[in-house]
Length: 245
Image 1 (cartoon, rainbow, N blue to C red):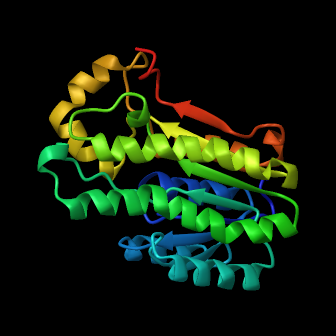
Image 2: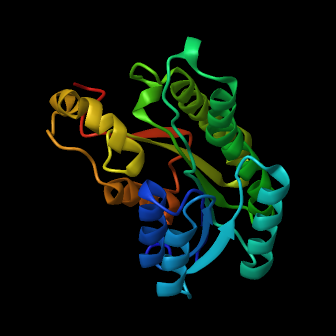
């Protein structure tokens, strides 16, 4: 098992890609901290089924005090943090001129400020143990946004820049930083887009199918593992050829 005995925190782990990553990490031997805000039932179900593999971590990633306290408790109990997957994110579609400031702020705070807060919270432990991996989950929208995604796309583009900068800052401490860039993937977040433009999106995909959360999770497991020791500062696209089409 490539993640045996590793301690990993996954934000937004109650559903979709986050849930798939958490499950994949546990199957490879990791103890996983399940962060959630709205998907309490799903997270608790995972914890109940696999109590030895999961630790519940309910907090808002955009709240520095709550995130710091939860991560500190995880560290106290597990003694180390080998990986952080910044997956929590929201997409509140709307054309910029008509979108309310509350929706704009929520996306920026969750999608960009959240990863910054969580990374900042785990870095002292990773520096002390001289090693660790941070994965930021982005989106192909950073490169190829659709109408109504201006704010969401901006946060995901910034997340890619944050990934590269963090890799430069902490590489000397043996801390690796990656960004996953999933394409159209069968998740709850994608359901609305799929209902409105599913056939059009499918036509752009050379593989002629949507991705599965488990396929993104497989890449995350590889990047979290020691097999990827010389990989950092990279954006890894998993999109069925969407950006190439």
